[in-house]
Amino acid sequence: MSASSSVTDEDRLRRIEQITDTELAHLDTGELLTELLDRVRALLEADTAAVLLLDPSGKHLVATAARGIEEEVRQGVRIPVGKGFAGRIAAEGRPVVIDEVDHSNVLNPILREKDIRSLLGVPLIAEGRTLGVLHVGTLRPRLFTRDDADLLQTAADRIALVTRTHLTDLDRAAASALQRSLMPGALPHVTGIDFAARYVPGEAGGLGGDWYDVFSLPSGRLGIVIGDVVGRGLQAAVVMGRLRSALRAFALEEDDPAEVLERLDGNVQHFEDNVMATVLYAVLEPSLERVSLSTAGHLPPVVARAGETATLVNVPVDLPVGVSVGPPRRTTTIELPPDSLFFLYTDGLVERRGRSLDQGLEALCEVVDAGQDPDAVCTAVLHRMIGSDSVGDDVAMLVARRGATPAVVPLNITVPAVPRVLADLRASVRRWLSSAGASGDDVVDLLVAAGEACSNVVEHAYGPAGGTLTLQMERQGATVVASVRDNGRWRSARGHDRGRGTALIRQCTDEMDVIAGAGGTTVTFRRRIAGDAP
Image 1 (tube, rainbow, N blue to C red):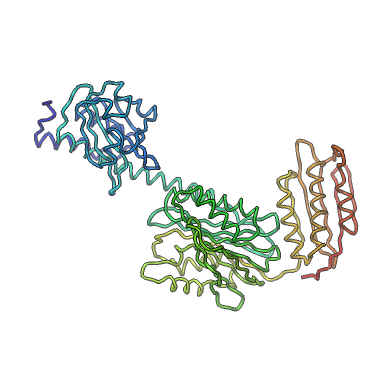
Image 2 (image 1 turned 90 degrees about the vertical axis):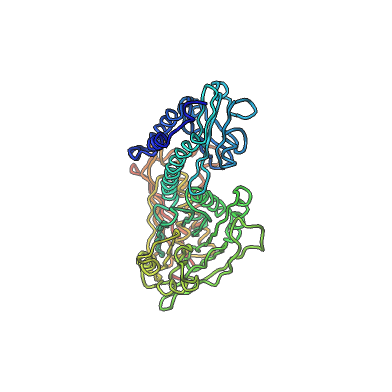
């Protein structure tokens, strides 16, 4: 029997103190692992010590820290859970001793190549969850004792606690960074409607999968989203990012909110494993008068109209995305008159211990006021619904308030003269024409005229250095007057049948003028519209 197999109580206490030494607390995670592995090797008279942690799938152990045989980490050793020495420890959650290493009991070829003869390993367990394995090995045959296993388990408990804290901190920091990157940095500026939003992380479990989004569509409509991925931490935030991107892509291809959510559901069921999310997707018309929406398991929005108490929208709630196939999804369209407010939120705002969901929804309707601007509404809601209480779940909310119908404000946009801006310009022109009272053929023809004028600037006005494009539109009585201006020197049309844009603009308008000079070119066109002025 080796000298280490005969241990007095005094020796045992000394060995434990070297592992639990409070002076180790000032070290960062990497330094602490290295120091603990060195101390474990010395105390157990071992030649190697290594920590293997479970990967995110929970199916493999990955070498994370090693002393004595550092190649385990450098070569990224992976061991399937349940297989070999380390895999068996992770699967069974108990110490394992191998007196004589051979091909049948050790999968890691590096240990065999280095002629490791005996091994002792224990599980890393924190809060009842197995995180990985700690093991030591010797180059000579060794009979590890129960005292050796107890000492190694003490070290493993210390490592597991530190690792759990480190992983939690990493998850929280990564989720926070991801969440900030995916939330809109600035909500769109749209004439006639104002937006505000808030995101409050839950104190109980860090960040999760709540999100909101607002984006313009090529049709001139606005897409509005609120969603909540079931789960917490980095994984939920990562899934949220994928769902957000997928929904945006489907929104470019489908006009019906129910169809967008149907395609999102198919995406989740095909590509995501055990993922479920509630999502509400709404589309705001260019006129701002109507909102079409569909909800996949999400709580109904609140609508507040001038002089009226806020109410929940009577919208059918379909199955969340990620659930097995159910009945067809449905779209509901509601009116959004001037001086009204549309309020979206996640369940963390209204669900509280000791209060029913109906009570939470009733309290929310009481505080939402169409007479306040969106930022003031957010502040009032958080004060009433949360106050000084701790927030156990994340809270996301989005407010859209349509103002009183104003006199038609002229459209004035200056953007880089590059192809990617043309779609957004078209959407802005469509919205402005709707607010100016244009409809039918007038909208179609003016969109064509503006699109041709802007495309001509992008293609012909500048060389490689580029420049800017300015688009202005205003209503003068029954006539829309538009101008597209650049400050470049035009190049000749390239290719066959090119340069017909001006002819098309003339066909779509009542009058067109072109003023060209050294300082740039301005194309002005006019069209009398049939619609009444708002």
